[in-house]
Length: 460
Image (cartoon, rainbow, N blue to C red; front, side, top):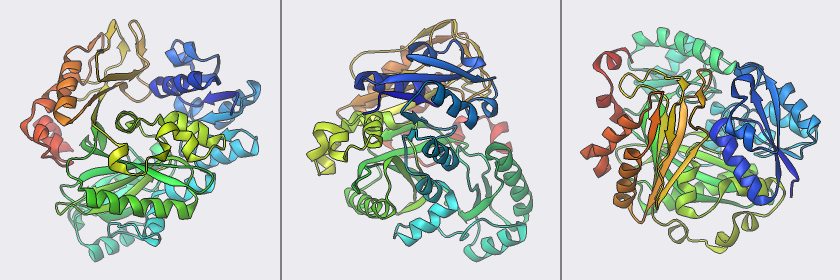
């Protein structure tokens, strides 16, 4: 087992990894920007190293600075969390060169499955269902028009190295394509340093379903069921839950088996997520893979009993999957492994009506508690919510024996969550949970349109 791990991240996920390391008896090193000097992950790590000013490019994305921090603190491994360098194959390679274990898949697997068009090609070759689309990056507007004409409108342009809705444009007619292509390419280049785009068929009202996977370095892969991530705004997830009300047991077993076969063939190790869109007929189509831990991993931990962060660390240390996930290792039946229902609300620092970011000092912070409630956060009273990074303030999760109980606990927890000094999305989440269609499980990825101001919808 590792003796010391550096966490190449910030906020609640850095704190989450520190908690797992403490339970495993592993020393931790936090890295931080000047804006995060008084953050909780800095306070609770055993050591902390400032790696640059507030700009991510100069700190959390600065590979030489992160590696230097790892070398001067003599760590065995680096956990990248999610975002920042977590899916950067070049960073994983540098870690290998410096003989520091990267807690994630091997660089070549990240490159294969983390790069979207390559993942599409691999998924097709490995027998996973995919949407019609370009075979690789579309070189220019003319090629994009040719592909779109072949598969039919509407289509969607996506950043090859993107995520979080950036570098993404929906195109419903040929006349819209030129402007959308230019805008998506510019946005992708600015956000990810790579303006490559690919194109695929757009499903108008899908559900977003993702499967949590774990693989060890000895050839075994398993999945821990699916998460429903359909409640989104501009491709940013707001609410996640597991299991999905829309997924049949037969489809879960069929797609789950196909995922295991595919990832075993590519030698996938550590945590990852396979993402799919579901059409009205209940058919799933692969869209991308996240070769890292997901923001919403906690709801899977609730229902499966598996500590995914500990499992990541144990797998990276060379343990077999059975040992890495603990006493549940002998459970082979998904229906036996996953019990109950869990829901997560992402509490963001933003106006609940206009969605404008809200940075500043948090004057009061009181997270809810009680049976079946979990809050992952790095926020505290008198802390600063910086304007430089993601607006996620806390992940509020509830668990119940069934969905109604999980929803009742979420409503109670939202009502008892106190945050002052900044605006948060809590009122928005309360409106969503009060919605009859949401309560009945009748929704798709356009569900949030009715909660957005009309002026904003017209400009979206």
